[in-house]
Amino acid sequence: MRLAWRNIAYDRGRFLGTVLGVSFAVFLMVFQGSLLTGFLNAASRLIDASDSDIWITARGVQAFEFGTPLESHVREMAAGVPGVTGTQRVCVSFAVYRTPFGKQQVVALVGADPDVGRRFPVPNVSGSSAEISADAVLYDVSDRKEIQVTGLPAEVEINRRRASIEREIHGYGAFLGVPFLFTSYRNAVRYMDFEPGAATYVLVRVQEGFPVSQVRQNLQRRLPEFDVLTREQFAAKSRWYWTMKTGAGGAILTAAALAFLIGLVVVSQTIYANTLENIEEYATLKALGAGQTFVAKVVVVQALICGGVGGLIGLLIVFPSIAFTRSLIPWVHAPWWMPALMVIPTLLMCSLASIASVRKALTVEPGRVFRA
Amino acid sequence: MPDRFLGVESAGVCFGNGDARVIALRDVSVAFSRGKLSLVMGPSGSGKTTLLSLLGCLLTPDQGAVFVDGVEVSGLTEAEKTATRQRKLSFVFQAFRLLHSLTALENVELGFEIRNAAAEEDRSRLARDLLSQFGLGEKLHRAPDKLSPGEKQRVAMARALAGDPPILLADEPTASLDAEAGANICNILRDQADRHGRTVVVVSHDPRWRDFADSTITLADGRLREIV
Picture 1 (tube, rainbow over the protein chains, first blue to last red):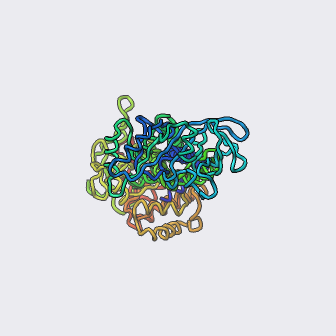
Picture 2: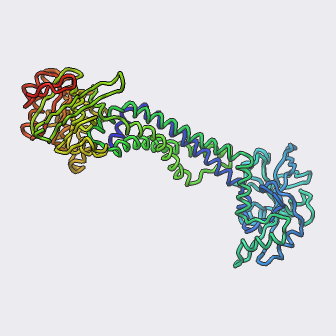
Picture 3: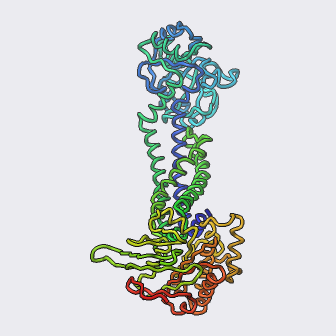
């Protein structure tokens, strides 16, 4: 398909315009895709960080951040169900935080039993426990500005009680615009004024050999006034709430769709203009005996070249941009498969963009070649 | 009609409807001999180009029949007509119709590619040979807009001959050329009939062609006026 390449190279200005349009579209799609992926990850990050199989929540809890307290008997009842090998408690609540400089602000305080999960940020498991106390408070490095801690340990107040911030962690930054603080379950219930043994969530580990779905059903029968969900179900519910019910995901998806449409319009306009400009040449090709496939290929390959080059440039620009954005929005995440995934909408965009042009080139009457 | 190698039989072609209706050809029957150079002459609007379009499978007659290489083609599908053009016909145009983004060599290579003629690795060599035969060996990599009109027409001629098609249809091939370049083209086409046995049909109102043609067909008002 040398002709396709040469047609593109012949009109470099137009090619550049198309490539810029595609680059812009791919940039926006990847950027929005990274926002969405990061948003989805962040929406269920703490649920995913637990090692438990099942989460018990108050009826109708939509997302991790909005749980309401469960009484201590819930945990006891859950522990008695066959197949349950262990239970842990997690509590979460918004709290008033006073910085070492006296400034007051709202934070989301999370407390958990020490064995809730290896990745779950609680004092005993998130680092060397020898260096910090069991009731230490942790915060994410990306929230340093809001937390206003200049050195560790730092004495602060949570709900008017003294607290000691002792460690910075990574990867659990503010998702709602409200910083998270993490501490032990024992410490958290003290700040939150929970009843003894109460928790926002009761997490259940299932004994090996018992099907998780079966144990979940048994738990639900035993605790009919609560929601009993597998970890994956609760994570999905939380993600669904943040992306769909708040409209945030819809906004991101709309922006990605608009980026696709922008690319589509730019490529189709350029390829169509190029086809019209070369319509006599398509007539000549047909008169010389070129089949429909040959003619269509010339047009489609031009669109795909524009898509390929534009897509590559878009990707080259977007990843440094995402890295920079991470300093402002820490949960932005561009997974490794995002560039590969972008091939599909880019090819689709270019193929759709060439439909009108292909039709034009295929329907041109070869007899017009005799018109001087 | 004695020879059905190439020609039309009782062919009629109309364009437009109602008051705008124009009869381009009326009941024309003409046969072109194999391996000869035939000239079609006539004033503007006489139906010369319409006749050439019929022979080139670019137009379907409203009535009558068209024969190409002994096959009646007016009833063929578009795909079959394309295949006929690919295998048996080639064209030389007044406006050259070279592809502007390709070099002279690439234009001729494209002729081979479209006709699926010769192995892919041989096409470049064969295209070079053809262009060299027409005195363009030094201008293989020139873009069409860097060639003179005479050179462009010789490139177009080389492209038309790529793949060795048996029939060559030329529409006013010398109309855009000066006397010398025109004579050169006349000689090349004459040579195609004499040395290569190609059937050449030239549509022109350039009287110089009479000296090169084996027969001359004259059309007027869409009717066959004379065959000499």
